[in-house]
Length: 399
Image (cartoon, rainbow, N blue to C red; front, top):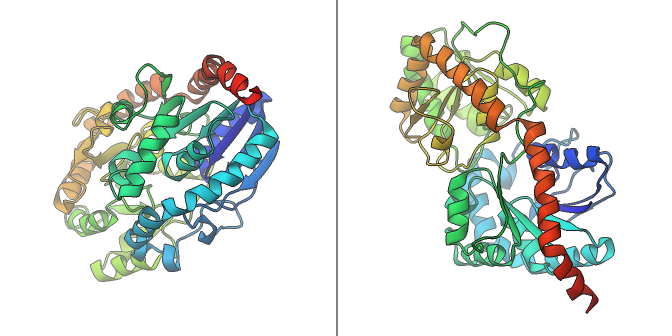
């Protein structure tokens, strides 16, 4: 297949998915909405500046950089607001460039791996190949209702899309409410393709030390303020507890919380880590905490489940597709530090709950989130979309 992806080329989620098709031997073009280094094996790599993405700082490792300046931890809300209000105004120009690339490459399928802004641009440039759009966890609940233009472009993208990929059933329902056509092809599978059991697996022995990890980093929809405020409440009853915070090393907001709450002795701020190193960190933790207000199926949730951590997450409809409270995890109000602290303490104090959850989660990940199995489904889905819509588009191109 000749595939063209419109994606954040720095994202481990996108890379994990795209890598499968490179390894298969498909001809893969990646049009990245952020500057970065091309993946090995690509047929072609291009970048688009959309929604001010060129201003994003890039680390030499290719991982998303630590946030600073306008993009810093202290200004996530400002950053998100600017992109939501003014980002759509940049779509048309980026779409013209994408259309030029499409004319040159003539792909069998275009896969936009998020609605804002990859889907916006791909929909605006559509008509030369079947368009598959992926939905990431906050596309509908956070971004779509935020401004009139975000609402317009979300509805436009779903009206144009020939096929849909979501990581939870909730977003399939919301997609139809935003205009995705009934009866069109729809795949439900984890956004990064799933879990590689050789990388993410439980430790040889259950963790006995009270180590808690927050794997989410700084995101506009993750209540890290709640998480940090919960730490002293946990330490009152479990003074030996240790907290690991992914992708927060060097961030001034995190450092400020540690100082103001006097918890630096119990917290380790980690740099961005590649998948294999992150898996090792998960295996040192007893509990994984994700106090998010918007999510689909977070890949970090699946990674934590596969690694034997007890999940403590925001009580969201999408998360309940994976977690039954009290059985294989705990769900809380992400804005309530007391509730977060109580859930962490419950996890520490109830080894039977942790053991039962680890068993149930290992089984669930193997059945629903195995990478090889899900990516084989994705490849078959691509073939279906190409077959069902490609002939008509090829006729239109030749007309």
